[in-house]
Amino acid sequence: MALQPDEIARLARLAHIQVTAEECGTLTERLDAVLDMVRQLQACDTAGVEPLAHPLDAVQELRPDAVADAESPETLMRNAPAAAAGLFLVPRVLD
Amino acid sequence: MSRAVGAGWETVIGLEVHVQLATRSKLFSDAAVEFGQPPNVCASAIDMALPGTLPSVNENAIRMAVRFGLAIDAQINRRSVFERKNYFYPDLPKGYQTTQLAAPVVGAGRLRIALAGGGEREVRIHHAHLEEDAGKSLHEEFPGASGIDLNRAGTPLLEIVCEPDLRSGPEAVALLRQIHALATYLEISDGDMSQGSMRCDVNVSVRPAGDSALGTRTEMKNLNSFRFVERAIEGEAARQIALIEEGGKVVQETRLYDSEANLSRPMRGKEMAHDYRYFPCPDLLPVIIDEAFIAAERDALPELPAACRERLMREHGLSVDAANLLTAERATVDYFEQVAAVCSAGKMAANWVNGELAAQLNKTGGRLADCPVSAAELGRLIARILDGSLSGKLAKTVFADMWAGRGGVDAIIAARGLQQVRDSGAIEALVDKVLAENAAQVENYRTARPEKRGKMLGFFVGQAMKLSGGKAAPGEVNRLLREKL
Image (tube, rainbow over all chains, first blue to last red):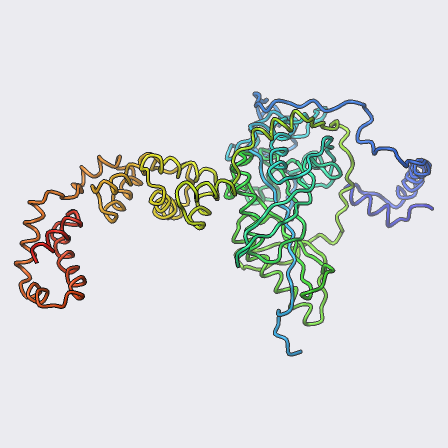
């Protein structure tokens, strides 16, 4: 059961990427291969198996609630393509 | 149909309440949580989602969530998982919000609200989970661009999701007030609504009264005042009822409430149903909350609002209403108890805190924490009324001066020369003067029937008080007048 073009378009929209008509064909093949693998996994009997939240058999260390001296915003924002008045600037967005 | 529009319908409301937790540092980084700082100074590399950074979990945020869970009698999940909720917005630099879904810290619990007609209702809490706040987008200042401030990004929020057990705007507000009170008592939030420390999403649906199936619901997001919540609910319920009665159908959608126009409209550009593609965050391991951790929080639970209300009524003989007002926030209770301790008069302390003080705070929009009159000073003011140095009326003048920062009680009394005249000789002179100047009324009084005299005496008392500039001790004036008449 191959992915349909409208499903690819929807996934592309959710991922905020542009997909051309030619790319759509290649993408369908590759994603179908991934989904085949997932279908194999889904065929396994998982009755009585706890859902896995993390592959490591370890638990989260908790951090004491203390503030540390941060890097200056100037340093942290050095790679920002655009900034002004201490703010990152991005192409205008409105709700 | 002969039925009136809106009659025979029941409104069903569910709330999702976001409480900003009062931690020092962020949920996943050691940057400071501080309001009103210059842009991006409270944002670390983690909050900015710079490559190669990894989150770490703030123990205090877990602790606060557990404390809240215990206070609402909830199941605390011993194993809790953070998940990624994926969507794109520039103020969410990672491209996902780290939140909880399948295994939140706090499971099902309950809260009780007081109903308008008396009685109580239990509201079921579905769960409460920890999540991070997003940054802020500023659209005004830069042509063709939006400015992004990530100071708020990563601020810990406790989202409390309640079951659709509420039936009216006032009930929703009652639940919000409960949560607000709890959060301040538990000291997990400063509860400052004006700074967004508590925000609320509201789900509203309507159904014919008596039906058990739920109607189609709409959601209104990010309401930040009790008044807006109530108005938004009433307006949305009326809209849905009118729509259905006209033969239309309610569409499940997110609507924006416009507080200025007092109406809601559908959000634009949301034609695509949300698909957040949640999955467990691979950067964070499951959080294990052990019995010792929970026991420590249980032992440290402070007195909760309901118990505090009962105690104030018992210890100070306060009315339910007075106790309710005082216990809405922990800070008010603490202030009241200090005032009452200084003046040893609980009822009067309650009257002043709920009356004059609350009125001034309302007028200035200030918070009790910034109140210019300390509890001890207010206590001393009330003590001056009780020892007869001040009349209730003059005390209000003194209070206004204290509020304006003109000094302490006794200094103001001395500076204004407000000390009550209690010296019998001076009062006697006043009384004599009044009687001499009002000979006709004196004659009337003396010939009047005894039951009429009480009222007539008031005239003379009034004259004498006026003559003294309000400073004569009223009891003494009364006594001397009766004697002389």
